[in-house]
Image (tube, rainbow, N blue to C red; front, side, top):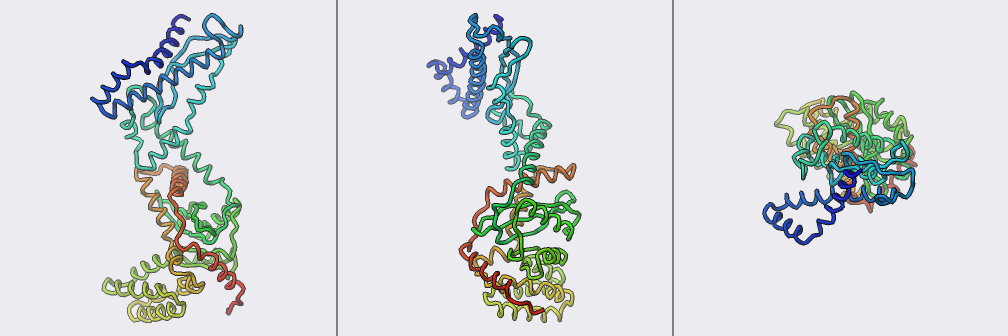
Length: 418
């Protein structure tokens, strides 16, 4: 008991000592000599002492001061090494113990300071910002007093944090999201293909809606993804504009599900690359110029005329390239037919918004050397999508969305010519 009392008094005395004039003067000289590292070390030590002071103070409040117990069945029981999380580190402290009969009483302050959620969240944020698990130890302010920060320990915390992010992403409801447009594209990671859906709402705000894994971007994967979004409350119908990177299977799946009048815009950037891939190098620059010129027109008739001319030009060079253009002809001009203003069309003509999100995925995961399982890929993709949402901006031209919606409504009510 005497040893335990000395430990308590030492912790309290140490905390009070920090305000001593001479002590503060000594710390000032250390900071002048050693700079920020000395300040960080002092801050870390202060945090440890404050934590121990709180622990001992709570025990005294419950059990009473020495030799004046408040309850006969509640008594102090020495102390032992413990740990708490301070400033992104796991730090050693002396943990005072308390008993009621033969059963130990947990201190609420100690349980609160042992919560790992905030620590794991901070680790995940640092990892997504580019800090590798193996370098985390190097960033510790007071490595000698910290423990549990080996690469494997950091990895365990990241698994914990990304598992929570995956759960959050998969389970968050979508009833409150009113979709104006949905971008669908595929990201390949670790030999796996993930079809990702990015939504744009009526106010011009973007949100990562969901993803589904498949061997390739096929109709079955898209069908399952759309079903998952609807199960979580997303209201999808023929009045929602879909922007896809290409592929007849995906467009067919969408129209089978929401009706043949569904409006689909093919990504113009993907189609441009596809056309050039068919052509010899000497024709690619001219094909690109003609294609972009046609799509830069604001008038539907003029854009259609220039695309027809491009098709005829391609016929004389490469039949497959011409057929590739013809296959996507009407879906390349969906925005022109809907009279979408140029500023908003700049966002909607391609899957660039979701491609930009994928570039964030690749940047955030550059420290991952390999995916050990599909589950790991799912965890990290969910974490990065949620992280990427924080940087989303309202799209330019959002003030035109309501006018475009009216045009979509008119298009839906127009009798089909086929």
